Length: 250
Image (tube, rainbow, N blue to C red; front, side, top):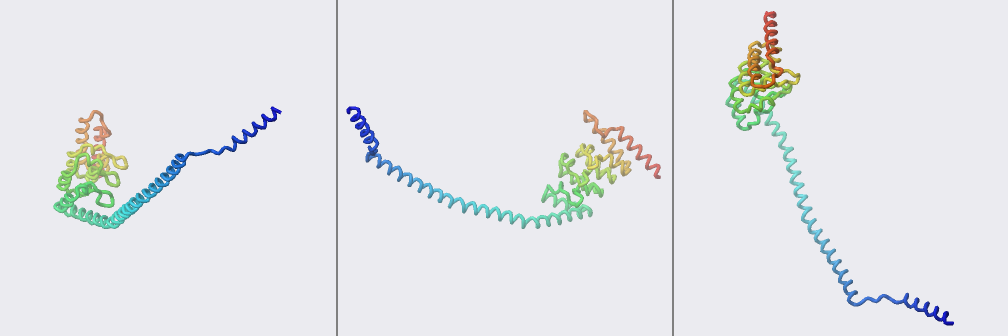
């Protein structure tokens, strides 16, 4: 009986413990309500802040993008005009050089000093190439005053020819001398076919120019520790061959 009563009492106690509800204090309930209210307010403020920021940023982005688009459009509109002006300028330059109007050439150079290093015809020739080619050596001398020696090796036409190559091709010995005084490294520059100005002078049988370039190469190599492909032996061979060919032709 005692065991039975004990078991019954134990079961009753377990049931009573399971049925005991969790009681919250008034303070805990109020804290939970306040916390929920604060979270709601914070979320609302964040949402309003985001809305405000986006309202400020989006119009500005649209305005900036519109401005950039307008600049691009303006550039497109200006390009044809700029190109047309450049074509006309180059035409005037070629004409002025051919006719010997240095005053006009000089005024164009002073307006844009970079023009002297730019190609002004369809073959990629600069005004220096053209002046050397037609033998306007007074122009060559004036043009060189607007250039640095280091500019000359980089000024090549579509064939890879420098102004010294042109001087060698046409036999403009005086022009070659002016160029060499400005930049001796021109002797070593090869064109697209791998030919130096000395090679070009030989190809075209310009004896005076070959002789000048040969002497210039000899002087140039004295200033260098290592000889180059401009060696005197090669130059002498070229000169002898050129003289022989000319005599044979006569």
